[in-house]
Length: 115
Length: 107
Image (cartoon, rainbow over all chains, first blue to last red; front, side, top):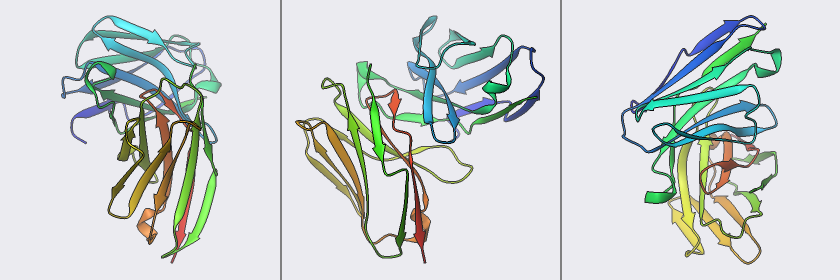
């Protein structure tokens, strides 16, 4: 569990404000992912990264952007938070398809509330 | 893109009974099928996985079976215990997850 961390763990923000969530991994994993978890929807992919400065969209990417300037850090930004973005956000890292297995290691999650 | 359907969404069993959770996927190119367990308030953690060149894999009380022709795979938990109560997620490859199954084991 100590290999991947998220900050902050909890955040309350107002509609329209920018928010950045940070994910940090010490496993030297090439792939990193951001998911949101909502009741009835399981884990839905927001964005993922397959290397430094290499990112791509997931199934629920609207309203989110990401950046990866170092192998160990993956940032998720909500440019202008909306109430529909209230959720629990999980970061994960893994070796990805180029070097199986594809197992992902999840961070502890960030509970974001947009009021 | 890949779709993963998971059933049932909730499952309640008596302690000692078996539990089965089923998933189907759409992309025939998928070749890695992990199962994650998420306890209340915790992060998802891998409990077992299977690759497409294997039909079944066991690890103590849990097993996973894969039918590539039918594009479905299942998680089997035998002799369930209260500590098996959690939400279980299947996935196909590394980015598409099922919606989850909330398993409750009644003592």
